[in-house]
Image (cartoon, rainbow, N blue to C red):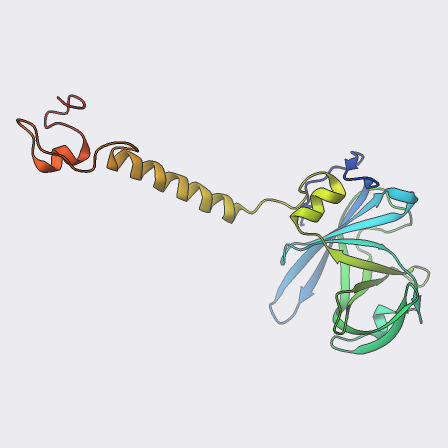
Length: 231
């Protein structure tokens, strides 16, 4: 069972630039089986109670590592993810602005993990249909979800890079990449080893050998007896 990965805690406020102030209220981790890859893919959605009492959501894709912010939107006509297919094009007015959309993804996830509370009833093991649409020739995104016959939601969405995360939440919420940390550590070790091997910054790289020294001894800055510099 996959666990939440975003660096947030239920019940702890996130304070970004005004007017952004929110509090994680609940988190659900979804899984979806990919028959082509023969494995499960996971993502998580956090419900945030916040500015103007709107129920914002933050989604994190465990595969792409993309962080997205969702907020409630209206659609005319109402979009139903169970009736949409990948690469399908639809015309719909979202928040009063009519645009042409392309369905970039559609499917159904199963709730694999739940923590906290939500503004409506969802349960472990429940299947949720979803679809993501992007504006054709434009930057806008829409996410629609159907939890059951009664709950059909439309959300406007935007991707949050590190700058936007700090703006909205006061800090980075995306998990740090172990690959990046290991790369930085490897670079640091290389620099330290190089400094020790080469005698460190400020040591002479070439000189005239003193009595009892060879040219190689002199280049490293150490004498031939191992007793310290210049000995």
